[in-house]
Amino acid sequence: MEKKKFDYYQVIIRKADQILEMLSLDDFVRYALAYQIKQVIKTKDFETGVPLFAFSTKGALYICPSQGYESLEDYQTALENKFPDAATFYAAREKNCSTYSEYETLLSNNITDTELFDKMKKAGFIEGYALFDSQRKQNELLPQLPSITNAKELHHYATEYLFEDFAQFKKLWEVGFTTVLEYQLAHEKGINNAAEYSLFKAGKFTKGDDYKKAKGLEIKTFEELKQYENLHAGDYPKSSFDELLLINILSKFEQHSKVTFDKLYDHFLKSEEKFRHDNCHGELKLPKWYTKRLRKESDVREFLTANDYVKLYGTFDADKDLFETISIKRRKVVVDGSNVAYNSNFADRKAGVFNADLNNILILVKKLKEEYHFEHVHVIADNNLIHKAKDKSVLSEIKTRCKFTESPPGVQADLYLIDQVKKQHCLLITNDTFKDWKLTDRWVDDNIDFYRIKFVLNGEVVMLPYMDRFEKK
Image 1 (tube, rainbow, N blue to C red):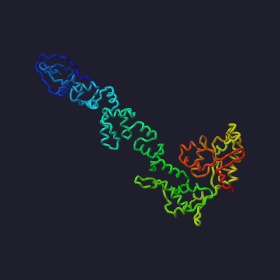
Image 2: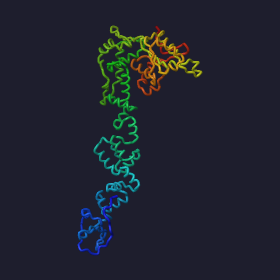
Image 3: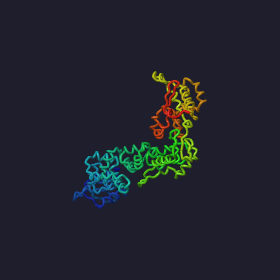
């Protein structure tokens, strides 16, 4: 409320020697303030009965028609808030409207519920609508929300979609969001504008970190990011992506396979086609991240002949035009030590006994080395396995037959096992299906089952069903 500046007195003027009538109420107020008048008389014209304001100074009585205002402070407040007259000012006050703009909004929206109007006002929608309407007209990229044509409709929309007030609505709307829920979903993914969130959804991403990584690589879809990561996982330094693709193909050929160059080259080209994506002009193009060195058939021949990484999986005979995969025994194999050690025999499992038995590992390693003649066997176990094993003395013999590694304290051996398979495309002996890892690691979900070999262990007998199809030499 406007601070009171004047004291008022109701009087009847009978007679005065000198009366000066001011025609402008604005001049009257300015004059009173200039001469620091504190006492103002409220009276009426003796002849017409028109209400007057008056004050006395310097031997004269100054009067001015009140124009319907009850006080000079009311007149000033009305003037500051652009009310056209006293009647409108007081009618607006009854509706709790502070400005003429608010009052116009109330009338134009046909708002009869003063409680509703007060809520709209406190939440900022009365003043905010004009700003909203102006901004959307000036910026066509903002959500236009054409169904909203006044402050009441804006308030209704904002309330329906859980905006707290106009300030929150404006903040989210200016970055493209039209509902609080949509913003919250995007914010949880680390995305703070609607345009980015639309790309996130269009690309079928589920994690914000994946989207940010993909964006940095100019990758548009989650499926393409999976392609990138599957190739990038291999530990083949300085290789281009088409070389990584070819190495990945070679790593999955069966033992003793003999593949003609034409068949291999055709398989490579067809696999590469899967990496082409629409460039938004109706053309299928390889992505920018997919670097190429194998541009011609001769490039592929030279790569198969000379590249050291190729030799990990086989040899290319240029004269016979054949690629032959190496014997399985020359492939590196990693063993999930903890999984094997806890693989109790049938009787123990039936009795509910699950003890860590290092002898299980020794039996399996002997099988791999003596029957399948694997040259590179690497057992990786959890750090606490040795402390829980009942036959610790067996460990020394295991170490004489193969490489044995314990994961650091507090770190799962699975992390190291998976890393070995990712980087070197080696075989993995385990009965673990890696269900949890498949939920969080795309490479594991897509590839681990190809390299994973299950085993059956009972007493001194171990069987490797997958391996039995390979010749024992």
